[in-house]
Length: 200
Image 1: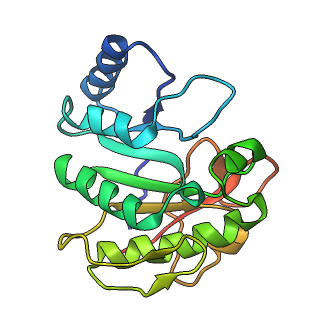
Image 2 (image 1 turned 180 degrees about the vertical axis):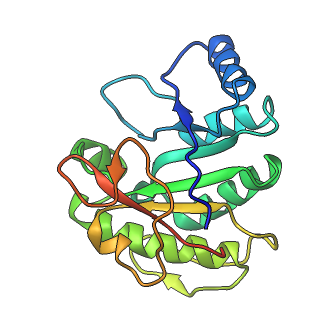
């Protein structure tokens, strides 16, 4: 078991050239990973997370690229599986796909036409769909998202992180491996536990 501490950077939003220069600098300094947050609507300007990570993929070669965390409940999981599998292939398997429930901004869910109270169930279901698509195994229809899993890829999926509190992290298949600044090994106010699934 690898217990070596590794450090990454969570960059705030900057004009493009400065953003790219910071990403290159993080890699040159030997940091292990580069992270971005995710919101559709937020109180501060924020780049779309997977688009930003794709831009980092083309200007870096070693550093891991992570979403910390992606609000899966706001998107169709079939499309997310396609985007993340493509991004993982283009960056040479460096993607760490962190998924979260969110909910601190109910208006964000309203803007996306997603019932705020369904976010946990949607994320749980979405993770199942995305994992099945990464494994090239149809999973059946997803009730809440209106998606039906269809194979999108034939290579292993990105490293996955699910952030959403004790219920999700207590799954028998979930083994905690990493934490971002928003969470830790136990659920706490304003934060969440992070777990990953080996062998995806």
